[in-house]
Image (tube, rainbow over all chains, first blue to last red; front, side):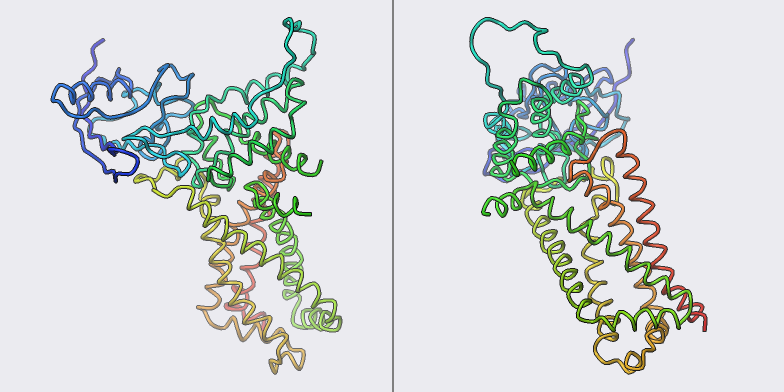
Amino acid sequence: MEHKKINLTLKIWRQHGPKTPGSFVEYKVAVSPDSSFLEMLDDINNDLEKKNLEPIAFESDCREGICGTCGLVINGQPHGPIPRIATCQLHMRNFKEGDTIYIEPFRAKAFPIIKDLMTDRSAMDRIMEAGGFISVNTGSVPDGNAIPIAKEIASEAMDAAACIGCGACVAACKNASAMLFVSAKVSQFALLPQGQPERYQRVEAMVKVMDEYGFGSCSNTYACEAECPKGISVKNIARMNREYFMAKIK
Amino acid sequence: MGWVWKSLNSSIGKKLVMAITGICLILFLVIHLINNLTLYAGPDLFNTVVKNLDSIKPLIRVVEIILALIFILHIINGVRLWIENKKARPVKYTVNGSSKNTTVFSRTAFITGSIIFIFLVVHLNTFWVSFNLGHPLAESHRYYDILVEAFQSPIYSGLYVVAMLLLGFHLNHGFQSAFQTFGWNHKKYFPLIEKIGTIYAVIMTIGFASIPIYFLFFFGGK
C-alpha cells in the first residue's frame, strides 16, 4: 500500500573534522513513512552527491539492530523516541507531518567527533581489551555439557551479553558515563564459570581504563537503561559495583 | 593503605563515598526529626530535651564534629563529581532529552543539594548559633521561644518549607541510589527499597516542613 509522504524539517549536525566547529544545517525532506531513518539519510546523501555536495557522514553496518554501529541522537534521545531499538530500526512512520527533527552525534569527551555524525568510540574497544576476554587452554573442544550452569544464571549472563556496544548508554547519561556498557561486559563473564579465573582482575582493569578515558561517574539516573536498544538492566551496574568492591578488598 | 585512597578516587569509589555519607545523613535526619517532634508536646518537653543534651555537651561536641565531617565529605565529593561529570561532556546536546528518560528527582540531585547547602548555612546560623552562643533566651533555657521568634517571619518560614520540599526530592533519589551503589539491587527487593525511600522522603518533608507552618500559623500553640 502506497503511503502519502510526510514533510519534515531536519536539523542535522555538520562538522567538517574533529577540530573544526560544527553547526546545524537544515534540510527539508518529503519521506515515505515506510522508509527507515537511515534510508532517509541515504536519500539525502544521494541528492547531495548529485549536486556535488559533501554527503552527511554517519555510521551503519548490519541495519538490523545487532551490530551496534549506528547511533544518532534524535531529538535528544539516542536511537530516537522508540524504546528498545537501534537507529537503523527506527521508521519514519513514528514521526508526524511537519515535525522538526534534530539529529546530533553522540556527545562525550571519550567519543570525539570524527566528522558530522560519526564519532570515535574506540575507547570502548580499549575497555574490552583490558578485560573483556577469558583464558582458555588450547586443545580439543570441551564437551558443551561438561560444566553445568543453572538456567537462571545462564539467562542472566545472556541478558548482559545482549549488549551490542553501541554507546547509547554513554550518549544518554548526563555524565557521559560508560557504566552500563562496562557492567554488562563484567557481568556476562562474572556470572559464568568460564569467567572466574580473571573475575576480579577483569573488573579492576576495565574500570581503570574506563576512568582513564574520561567517562563520567554514575549518578543512578538510569537514563542508560531507558535508552539502551537491548534493554540492558542497571542491575548490572549494581553487580559491577559489588564486583569492584570485592576485587579491592581481596 | 595507598590502595584505599586510590580505590576511593575511582569512578566507583567516589560513588561509594557519596552513598556511605548519604546513608549516615539519612540516619541523622531520622534522629533530628524525632527530636524536633517533641516540639508538638509543648515548650516544656522540648526545652527539657535541649537542656539535657546541653548537659552532655562534650559528647555532643564530638558527635557534631563527626557529623560535620560527614556533611563536608558528602558536599565536597558531590561538587567534585559534578565538576568531573560536566567535563565528561564538553559539548552539550542542543535538544535535551533527559525529561524523557530520567526522573526529576535523579537529574536535579546536584541543584537540590546546592539549595539544601544554602539552607543548611542559614539554618545553622539561626538555631545552632542561637542555642550555643549565648542567645539570651537560650541562657534561660527558653529554647522553644527562639523558634517562636524565628518562624514569625513568613519569608523565613517559607524558605524552610521550600527547602524541605527540595530535601524530599534529594532524599527520594538518594535513598535508592545508595543501595544501587552498594550493589544491592535485585528484582525481588529493589522495588521495595524504592518505595521505602519515597515514603521516607515524604515523612521527612512533611515532618520537618510542618514545624515552620505550625509556628507561623499557630504560634507554636501559644
